[in-house]
Image 1: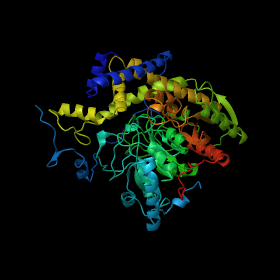
Image 2: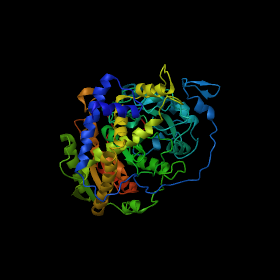
Image 3: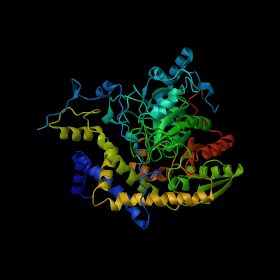
Image 4: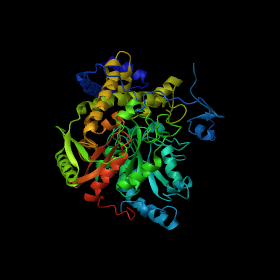
Length: 92
Length: 472
């Protein structure tokens, strides 16, 4: 994978990489992609994809709201709050 | 002692509670199994009655336990307190068992050594210079050092079985879906299962019986034997009946000499127990790891998109705008191995590359379970290595991250095919344990327990010499 592709991929993943990370992670990604290329040896003609280990069909349930009693415990996990609102930087 | 009897009531009696805490305080500084140890907090959430009353157990820090931190070994979840409890943990608490702490792990389950944890190092009780394996290394080490009789872990590509093998204990990866994943932080959703590390087969079996079952909070969960389509019935001959034929994986497996010798010896032991032991070939073996890493990283890149530093977890000191906040939180909050897997997963899912990687891997996954179906026509269970080496050393003397991934070739199969697998302590080589795994058709856990028990009658599991836990 060339540097440009790595930059695009990192941007899609919301990751800012440092210069040295472009080198180390770039090499590691390349090594894995080469390893993945082994999959080309397999004849996949006529094989359907397996998306899940056992369950084939979508399982649905009624779309019903459920209440969660301890909402404070959720808010307490927010890094910064003000009057039960989560604070983020200004949107300009 | 293979049962839980000596552990029952341990934490509900004030005197034995104190001696238990004293034992852990003596052992834990050497091992480093726990990210948090707080049995008093655990006691508050457990039933005061039940078959496991007062029995301590540990939980990998990827499963939610109300009131305890939930870090997944990552900086990005530093300080997060779980608002609720995972179903598997809750079922054990209802049976009276007590969560004593959360165990160390590779960050988000990504690794084979527990060394990618942001927080601390976990040592193998058999040799403190060596890793306990991973990613459930803390859970396996806590069991092996006698601090708990069992611990919960998670197994996406071998993360319960490999540390169990490294630490000389049992590690069960159940059939996909049989244990609810509610409260398990997602890594790769089509592969993740909640697993069990335990000091005996009997304990593994007892814990499994308590935690399994369909859960309305996990749409992919199944009752044992529940057949929802043709796929699960085709490999689902694992219920009932006994085991007569054991197929051992043959071919050039690339095992270390100690593991190789132990593998041959283990086959002999099974022969001497009267099983028909014969070689089998897993024709897709060389593709397991590439297919696994393609699928696992793709799913991980989607699952880990939720970590933004906004609602919870690590937040950078300063950010100009929300987008910069997210990028900084992720770049500073994730470790190198996690970044690598997110990048890989993002790449294989990008338009233009999907056919080449992700779609191809999913189609080969079909060939993999078909291959298992073929093999299970010939044998009742499969015997296979867990890992090509024994516990390796920490740091640069050990296996590098790429070698560790290639070495996952034996364990990832069970996750890709959804079948159950049990890692059991089989031998010692050079003073370190060697473990192998048994794999059965879907829902065939019972067969695994049956065979592992027979084996243990002949070759009882050994304990590391320096940890004289009075209850084990």
